[in-house]
Structures are given as structure tokens and as C-alpha cells.
Image (cartoon, rainbow, N blue to C red; front, side, top):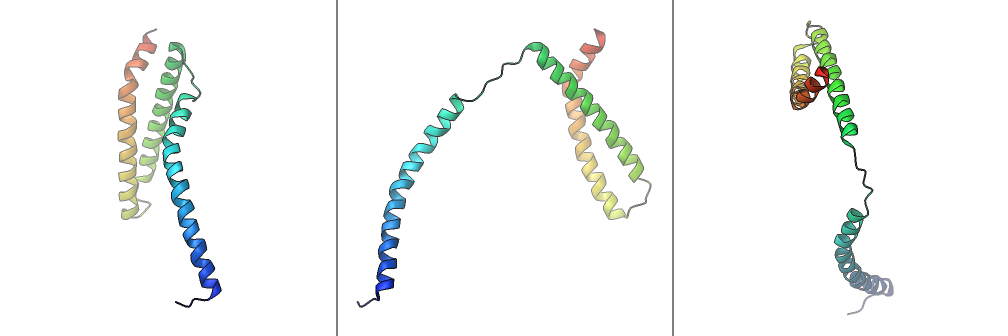
Length: 119
């Protein structure tokens, strides 16, 4: 087989690159789980006190109630027929999914809100 010098160099470099890729690829595959384990063990840890957790829960409930009110106001403003029907359909589907999310969140943390109101 007679091949030109540039083709010979390209083939030789390709073979060497493939060989080096298999070596370093295998080393990398073995190193990734170890790096992930080391990163997990060295992660910064913040231990929250019960008071901090209660404040975060209360803030989350208050924010979700505000979002719920804004959502209902937006839905009332846009249900007057100013936009076309296709746009209203997609808006109502989107708003309904957001409303379900916030209702679930409010129900999840409602026990906390009732507890704080009694105090």
C-alpha cells in the first residue's frame, strides 16, 4: 500500500490518540465516583435550629399566600375576554397548574400557620 506522508501522519496520530484516550478515559471513569464521594463528604453543612426552620416555614406560607392572591387577581383581570380564546385557554391551564401547586403547598404548611396564629 502506497500512502502519502500526510495520510500516514494522520493515521499514526489517530492511533496514538485512540490509545491515549482509552488509558485516560479509564482513569477518568475510575476517578469520577471517588471525586463525587469526596465532594459529598466535604460539603458545607449548615445545621438549622428549630426556630430558624419555623421562620422559614412561616415565610414560605406567607409568600405562597401572596402568590395565590396575585394569581387569583391575574385570573380575574384576564378572564374578561380581552384576549382571544386560544390565549385564554393556555393561560387558564397554566394558572390552574400553578394554583394546584400553591394549594398543595398551603395545605402542607397550614398546620404551621394555624399553630403560629394561636400563639
